[in-house]
Length: 369
Image (cartoon, rainbow, N blue to C red):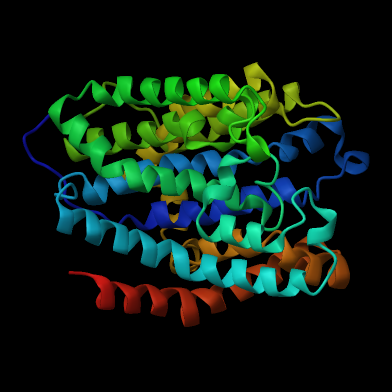
């Protein structure tokens, strides 16, 4: 280890990998590897490509550590500007998707067919991200937006997390344990009887809340700290990029072994451990270390102009690939996953170029102090 700190905060390969993570989630929802053609094991393997969300969570911890760990975001001004940057990055496209979905669904019988039967409640719960805490309606309306509730929890807690780690490096280990304990306590207190399924059970906790998924973010933080301190891992002649990819594939295959007709692999205890712990520790972190430190064909492809553009537009792609847009363009127009995939990428790039990026710049310029 050297005393030199790395200050680089932009890594093209890490931008490109965002597109891959988003595409894995797309495959999870629109599996083209039909059992009748590719066989049951291949079909179930691609059913478990929700692991793209795990990749996003680890990446969030890594990138925020690289960009903000040395910045003072615990002061009033520092925290304000940090949240402005996060707000400008996340909210404009999210607000657009949520609002358009609400307007369209309000003209139909959609909300009458849901558990809550209140479009206004869905809309308010989505705008404030609190819907992700309630098991009864966290996947309705814009079904995959629960992951943004997890992200927002991390953003709000990030300054305190960084402060505690600066004071004691062991906080990287005991803080996630504390969060998990807090989540378990909430589940125990609510006992499955809280309003709208608030922290309904342990499966909900470990699959869909920050308190259950926090380890993924802390693995990213730990990886970022290792990189910033110029740590040289005591492993020679190991291609981290390829090794990480292989382990991620094996973890996906392992999750498929838990898969049943009713539930994905991460519904079960073994699958949760595999998805929330083994996959990020043994697979994703190794891949990301390779993307940070190696130059090979994988990093070259992910760093290309095409993939960096796809990575930058991947957030919009992720938001629009399910829900209203799927009903409008997939189920009622093409019903062809490959064609729908192309539609989504074109629309996501347009949204990024003409709305997301301009709004991001505008809001940061107007709101930052």
